[in-house]
Structures are given as C-alpha cells and as structure tokens.
Amino acid sequence: MKINILIAGILLSATALFSQVTKPIELPYVEYPIEAGDHDEVVQQYCLTCHSFGYMLNQGKKSRPYWTGTVAKMVNEFKAPIPKEDQQIIINYFVKHYGYESNTGH
Amino acid sequence: MDKFSRRNFLGAGLIFGASTLFAKEAAKTVATETKAFVPPMIAFPEKKPMKTISDRPPLLESSRDIFTQAITPNDQFFVRWHMPDIPTYIDLNTFRLEVKGSVANALSLSIDDLKSKFEPVEITSVLQCGGNSRKFFSEKTGQATHGVQWGHGAMGCAVWKGARLKDILNMAGVNATAKYVGVNGLEKPAIDETPHFFREMGIDEALTDELIVAYEMNGQDIPYLNGFPLKLIIPGHFSDSWVKMLSEITVMDEYRKTFFMDVAYTVPDNDCECVISGGDFEYKRKPIAQMKVKSVIGYPAPNSVIKKGSRINVTGVAFDQGKGIKEVMISLDGGKSWSSTNLQKDYGKYAYRQWSFSWEPKIKGEYSIMVRAINRIGNIQPLPGDIGWNAGGYQYNAVDVVNVKIV
Image 1 (cartoon, rainbow over the protein chains, first blue to last red):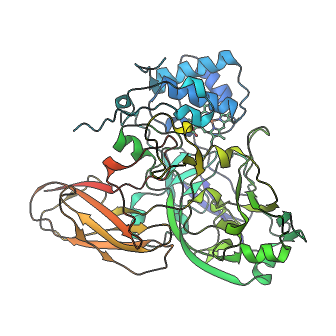
Image 2 (spheres, each protein chain N blue to C red; image 1 turned 90 degrees about the vertical axis):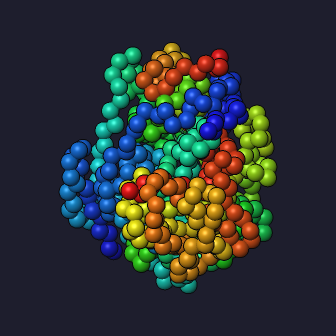
Image 3 (tube, rainbow over the protein chains, first blue to last red; image 1 turned 90 degrees about the horizontal axis):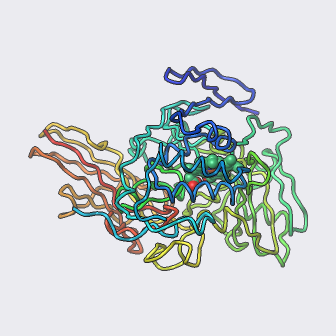
C-alpha cells in the first residue's frame, strides 16, 4: 500500500506547510467571511451545513429572484430544514449584501 | 457595443424547482458587476496552491497557465466534489468496489483484484466539468447562470490507467434484462435527505471499450482529492459521471430518477441545447454528455504588457468529443483575419492537442487574441456573441479571447 498524502497546514493568509503522513488527510480550513449585519447569524446558522460560504461568494452580486430561487432550491431539492420566516431573512440578507433588487421582478 | 441581450433570465429558477419565484429580469443588471470575490490560493493535500472557491466540499480551480501543457500535472489538476462528507482515509486492505444488482454474480473487488484480474488499459483523455467556463456566459452574453462560477480552470488532461468497465461487468455477468448502470462513490451529503450523488448510463454505453475504472493518473495513484483510489473514466464526455472514489456499480433493469441525473446537468433537448425563448425548464430536458469542440489560450495571460518587437509563443490547448482536432486558428485583430496555428504532438483523439503560434508584434497598442478550433467533422467553436445560453451554464465553448497590450 502506498498512500502518501501531504497534509497542508494552512494559515489563512500565510504560507502552506507540507508534511507527509500515511494517516487521514487533513483538509485545510478556509474562512470565507461574510458581511455582518441584517441577521447574518441566521445565514450562519442555516447555510453552512452542506457547504462553505465560498459557494455563495463565488456567485457575485445576484438579483432577488436569483437568491429567492437559490434558497428555494436548497430547501426543496436539497432538503435544507429552514423555517419559512428564516428563509425570507436569508433572502433579504443576500439581496442586500450580495445582490440587488431587480427592477422588473415581482 | 451593446452586448446586453433582451432575452430574459426567466425560468432559470425552474431548474431548481422554484418555479413561481423567478421573474423576468433585465439582462443588463447581471453581468460583470459582481462583488469582486477572489478565491484564495491554498495548497490542499497533494496539490500546489490553487484557486480555492470552496474548502467544503473542495472546489479547486487550475490557473490559466496550466494550458501551456498537453498533460496536466496531478498536483495542479482541478478538484470538484458535490458533497461535504468525504472520507479522509481509505484503507486499501478493506476498500472494495461492489458490483451488484441485475448480474449473475455480484463482485466485491479490491484494488489488487482490479490490477491483477483484468487487462490494464491506458487512455489519455480530457476531464472537463460540465460547468467549466460558466462565468463567461454572463460576461459574454449578459445573462446570469446558476452553479459554481468557474473560469476555464475546471478541466485537465491526464493519462488514465485501469480496467475496462466492460470487463468488470462481463465478469459479473449482466442479466439480459439489464438496461442501466448506476455509479456512485463514497462522498455523502451532510443530511440524509439531500439527494446523493448518483449517476446513470445506458447499458450499451457502459459496455463500450473505452470506459475504464481507473486506479492510476499520469503514472501515479489517483490523487486523493481527484478520487483515490478509483475513478470512472468516460472519454469524450463531460465529467459529471466520472465518479470519484468509485465504490458501487449497480446494474439495473429500470432507470432511477434522481436529482443529479434529471435536474442538474441537463440542457434543453433541442439542436442548440440552449434557450431560444422563454424559460429553460419549459423545454424537454437532456443530460449533457459529449463535450463540444473548444480551445483556450494558456499564454500570454490576460492583460499582459508585452514589449514591441519581442517574439512570443502564443500557446494553448484544444480538444473535442473525440473526433480529433483538425485545425486551430488564431486572430490578432479581434476576429477580422485568421491564421493557422501549429498543432503539436497528438496524444490521441480524446486528449488535449496543444497548439502554438509565434508572434512578433511590431505595432504598439491593444490587441485581442482569439483562438478558434475546428474538429474533423466540422464542428467549430461559436464566437462569444453567438453562443447559445442555458440557465445551468453548461457546455460553454465560445472562442477564447485574451487582451494584451503592446508597448
């Protein structure tokens, strides 16, 4: 058996350290900070269960219909257990901090 | 230049079952004005620092300069998982590939079994995510897409070695009633209700010669994050069914409907595989499968400043669904005139074909370098303004453009 996995010691803005191990790999932990305010704690509570905030930040600014559809997809397709009121708080948070109101949307 | 199409974003929500929530939206509001998110460059196990779009699940994108090589090194090969729960250790003494379902003899194969009981085969093939280059849809068409906003770096080309899927299925003895083969790996969702990453293909496709269950990539064990110890290889096809940490092959008499087959990774079932009017999910669906002819520029990098009179070797890679690249043309004047590039070594019809062009710019100014590939059956890349749009942002293959400045 020849598993030679490198583990990367990660300090967020610093250099990576390498060392060889034959034990479980250790994935670096990356912090993807999101903007504070407008109940970001609700977003923190529900939106980190299945993936990092990198998924959201990578989207860039998106419209209200986009964020509404995305949150609905998380709930309907991926079965994220998020109460209705909190879904609305999350949508409003993303529209304000990572999006815009759409002029033609309803 | 008005690149804002009047076509609407309508229907993109349907892709995700959010049918009533998506409304019409002026396209001009979506393009390029993104809050600048620059993924950090981080070294993951067995990898050089790569653009880390996400750590959990890991989404690692290669840099553009990777396209100056026909074979992508393992430590710079892109990484893309769907589910957060990935085993952090695989003990080869206990790891087994299970082959089950509608077969005469279910199999439980160790890596040693795969290496010793089946004829080893090798194939050089491009592995490209269906959503590769997705971010260019909004830049070039003015219309947003769903999904991870990859640049060109969700693809690579490697030499894969393993056992033929066909040989494995034949050892198990597929029942006459079998119609589909399902494949899945060890990645798991955080909560059980989330659809698992399960992919299916027709039995005829599974029994073709070229599909292999690979245990080696570029002469080494498959890197952990690329799917150690086993990965399914489907040359010429987008990578959605190239399952990583492949652990189960299930032969089935009936198709199983799943989110990752029937909703994700699908496009309109029409000639252009794109939205002509209305919403994406108003169309009958088809899963993306064969790749489309494509070329990208590896060097020079976008926005390079180059001294007048220097000789530069413009280079990149081209590939298609396996018909073979016939020609890659280059334009240095924004698409007005085109010349041939030199095609480099042929690694096989599923591999990258590297191309190069020696350029000695004599006049100062801004230049748009464009490349356009044609394959042996005449498929040609669309110009950026002509590419058909789909809400999932799949199969982007428009002509690549790199702007440089000669001083």
